[in-house]
Image (cartoon, rainbow, N blue to C red; front, side, top):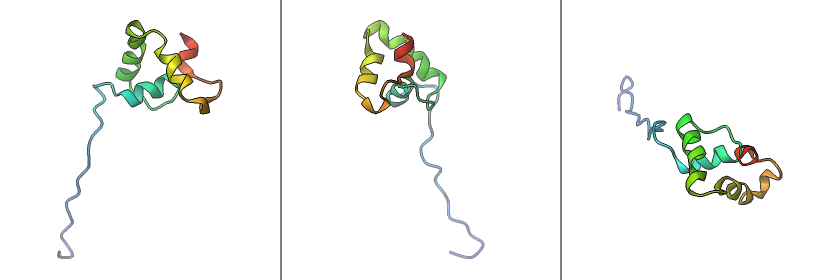
Length: 74
């Protein structure tokens, strides 16, 4: 490689914020900040199919100990 040649850098995978992602939906249910509107919308729709899913998410993470964002609202 010469001094003036720069290596090509692969920017890596991009996050598609138009498609909900399970990890970001769970993050939303747990009261986290790492979700997008599409994840929050999907997270709000899931209980119509699986009532109690947000509470289940909270119960599966005892480290949040008493705080669980969306599950406490529903």
